[in-house]
Image 1 (cartoon, rainbow, N blue to C red):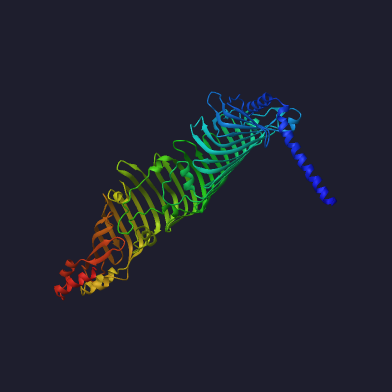
Image 2: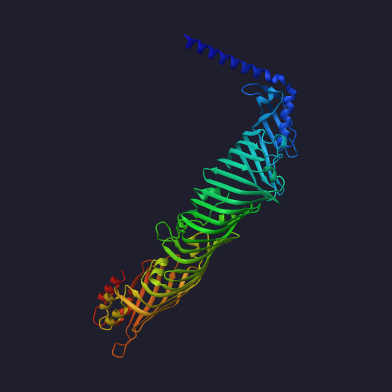
Length: 603
């Protein structure tokens, strides 16, 4: 029975305490005149912003905490810096017990705020870089924004950003300021956190430690270091950046990348120096599409045409991903790609990048110890290889693609010295019949609105020299010696085997896509072969005629020569004897036999 009585007494006491507390809350506001509460709120607003606000109707509330709701709030400093649908100011209870009014928080709803970056600092009605009065240090009101819009503008660059659906809280602790915010940046939900150790110092052109973090679904960026405003923003510290897709991240800044493949996962860490016009990343460690590199990068923040320059070093770099989605040949592999070329994205940025790598991979082509330089200027992309080992030889060259009156222009100037011709020619043309130590030089220009159109406009020249090699798939010497005895039997000797040579030289002049063989000769101790005719680059076929002859010793047959044809696709050329010439040499076989054999050999 005593227990029940005690419970009842405790419950009654708690009820009386709650009623008493409620009565205190109801009575407290009347212990201080409302005009004093209103004046205290206005003073707090002016201390936080530096400007006396204009307000509409005022509504006083008691629960859950004493406070005021002010409608149609406007802070005017000449540029309509801040407006709000309403402002709610909450009052601290304990100071109110002794008749003092202290504002605990200021909550702006549907506010529209302007922030301006200038060489002198950040102007936001004096907030957040306004030093709190010494008397109120540590007791400044917490400032909240809900469902608001913030316009951020740079005076020097003219860039502007609109942040919408902003929910933010700002709190002072002495001279330090902390902010947490969720918002929509360019339509993307994002979170921002900021801590300034000495906000007042920033307002006096002094330095202050700052921590900044920005996160959304496509990127995470962080900075920790020193900030100052001396002729604009000056910052130095540790910078980190991660993105699941660099392509999506750049598109959010209005930058279109010029390739259909690559520009995927990105991770970056560096020591950064930031000014209003540049971001320099030193001691940089970057990983993009699985490629890792170290070095230095500088980003110029030009709103019309941002530019990136720097120097990087990597153990290996695989650029195959950037070739995905684009092919030189058509889908059926029978011709050149006829899709329109679009290089307009190149006009949107500048680039001056140098890369040294132990290994570089482009699809099936691999080079080692390469020094590359890539640049984009006035919409023209240039890639240069100062040195590099490829197919066992030394590569030097330049390739450029840029705008032209009829679409896109292409220029290639390259040399490869002392390379494995079977590997090199096979990788470039698919033909692996020529073996030996080769040297190759090419100079080409062309323009058009597609790869197919460019091949029809190609002009230039090419030269190939192969020493101490062989021609695989044909035994010319054996065929020629058989030809001197029985012409038709030579047809079977023409295919298969191998023809060694001392020297193979080809010089080609290219005009409007047609490659004319100005000189093509194979020389060995026993055989000489000459070749002339045309190769069509647009049609990807050959129409060549040649003569193979014995360099006969004294005891061998004299005057033995085999005229032949090379025709068909250059991916799989057909080699066949010249039938009419063979007919003139046949003395023992009938005309029908000769014609049938020549026809069969050409299939």
